[in-house]
Length: 496
Image (cartoon, rainbow, N blue to C red; front, side, top):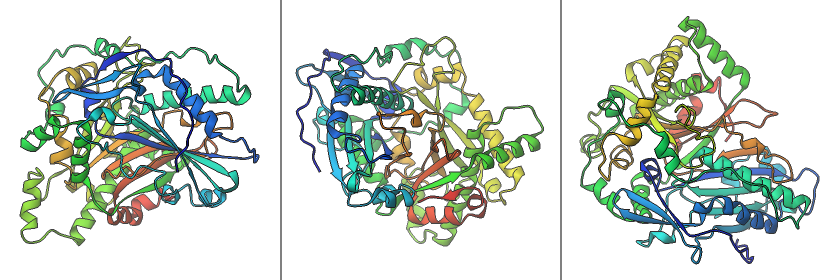
C-alpha cells in the first residue's frame, strides 16, 4: 500500500496564514475527489508514481499553505503555520488493484470497487489534541492490473481550498507533470499566478451597510453547550465528534447522469411556463429536480418507517427540529462569490470563497406530483436565491451576523439528522477534464463517499458524453427510494 521515495526538498519559506470565517466552517473535513485515467496505448511509463511524486512537490511550492500545520488560536479562530524546518509534507501512497481496468470502466467507475484503504473511510479530520499533526494533503494512486489505468484519490483539507481552488491546484500539478513527461530533466515550469493569502478576500468583501438580512437570519441556529464544546477542542477531535453525530453504517453514495438534451428540455419547460425573460440556468433546474425527488423520497421513507413511542418525541427535541412534521424542506447550496463582487480580482484566489444560500419549499408543494408547473415554481425559487447573493448579502455573510465561536458548527450538530434538508455543491462548471498529466484527460472525475449524509454534488461528464453527473450521499434506503422515484428515474440514469 505504501510508496517509498525520498521526498524532494521544498523551496518554501516560513509564513503564517490566519484563516477567515469561511475557512473555519470547512475546518473539519477534506474535499475527496477521484480522477480516473485510462492507459489507452499500453505505455509502461503511464502515470509514473515517481514522476507524480516529484511533480506534486513542485506544485506545492506554488501552494505553500499546503505544507503548513493547522493550529487553533482560540475557539473559532484558526491559522496555518508553515515552518520551512518542519514542513507538513503530503501523505502519498500507492495501491494495487487486482481488477482489470476494463471491468472498472464497465461498472461506471464505481469507487466501491477500489481496494480497501485507497479511499479514505471518512472525509472528516481525525487526530488527537495535537492538531498540527493532521495531514492537509493525502493522496493515493491506485494502479489497475496490467497497467490498464489509474485512479488518483486526492484529499485536500477543505480549510485550504474550495472546489475552485482544488481545481487550480490539480491543473498546476498536472501542468508540471506533463512537462516532466516530455523532459524529465526540466527544472523550470513557468510562473503560477495563484493567490492563497486570505487578505485578498478580506479586502474585496465590503462592510455590511444594513441590519442582518432576513434570508441570513433564517440560517442562524441557536447555540448550546455541545456546539461550544466542539468549537473549543482541536480540529482533529472536532472531526471525530461531528463524524460520530453523522455516523451510520449504511451511508452510501449513488451517482446519476442527466444528458445535455434532458437538461435543455427541463430549462426550456421552466422558461415556457414562467413566461418571462428571466435567465434559467442548469443549476436552477438541477437543484429544483433533486429537491423535488429527494424530498419525495424522504417523505415516502418516513411514512414507511415512522418513529414510534419515545423516539417520536425525543428525536425532534434533541436534534433541534421545531416540529415532528416541519412545514418546509430546506435546501442549502454553496454560492461562489469570486465573480459576484465588482473589481475584486478574486479569479486567481485559491482559498474558500463560497457562502451559503438557502431555498425553502413547502412540504405540501413537494408532495404534489412532479409536474412541469411544480418544477418551475421550485426552479424560480432557486433563481431568486441565486440572484439574492448580492454584495450586501456577501458582506453580511462574511463580516456580519453572529460572531460566536460555535456559529459555523451549529448546523452540523443540531440539524445533523433532521430529515427534510439537503446541502448541495455545483462542480459542473469547473474545468475538471482539462487536468492532463501528460497522458490525456481523465475518463471520469467524481467525489468519494464522504460518509456525510444529505450531500449532493453536481459534476461535469466527460466531454464526449456531455451532461452532468449528480452524486448523492445518504442511507442505502433513501438512495433506493431515489432510484424508484418516477420523476427522477425517467430523467436521471442510475450509474452506481
